Image 1 (cartoon, rainbow, N blue to C red):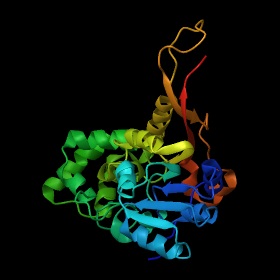
Image 2 (cartoon, rainbow, N blue to C red):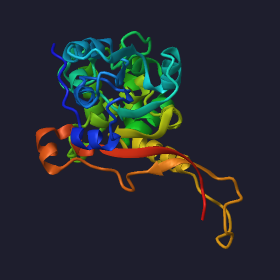
Image 3 (cartoon, rainbow, N blue to C red):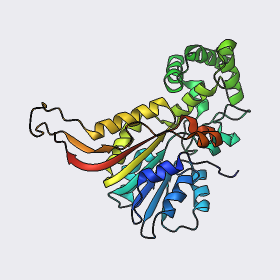
Image 4 (cartoon, rainbow, N blue to C red):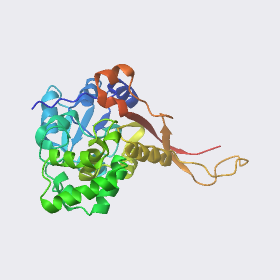
Length: 315
């Protein structure tokens, strides 16, 4: 299957990165290389792009799409390990980083990946197919209370307890192996009168996918590490699709910006508060109406941008 993926807020991301022709840039979620190809078009041959993805199929598709460019390094890995990856490449600082979080259109559409609640597919949901934990493991082995908590926190599903209870009742009879089996359980767990906000399985599938791929827990630290490896004036652009992701990014940006706690009447800062830079986006950038019409995935997308600068706060 061809790796198709429409890059979300492409223009806004490219503008947000403020690309230097000779700079070093990281696409931490390479995917279909929709963002990467535009970054490369703005780089000279002296510039470099490092493309990271957990999905080996994404990397192979990107290599094909970007075959005209020689200044790309492809890394099968996780953007959570960005410091380790750059160290192995003998790179200390980069000029820009892009993270487009969430699942790609290809992964949703590829039947054997099990991300979609449509059709009947194996429960998998791994972005990195070399990892052991799958959606089938989560659904069949997790404690009922933990399952309910995951579905509630990661999916914001108010019927999480009933869904978790019915999953556990069903798996006592036989293993839950397919997406359709899971969808059937979810549908009978939510009153018909409350099934009017999109597909009833949407939130639960999102929650299980986030748990399988550990998408939320390390994110705050990942943002901190991304800012740490930016050169002065470098920018970090992060696209989120979920309130928990956005909150982690927002809080990490605020912490990195720093806050002076000195009394207002002091002529200069004595508290030693240090700022790592500034938040470019006071409010997150959202997709324009025309893009939302063409790509429904962009509807929930939020883009936040941080610019690195070594500064001590002053009044």
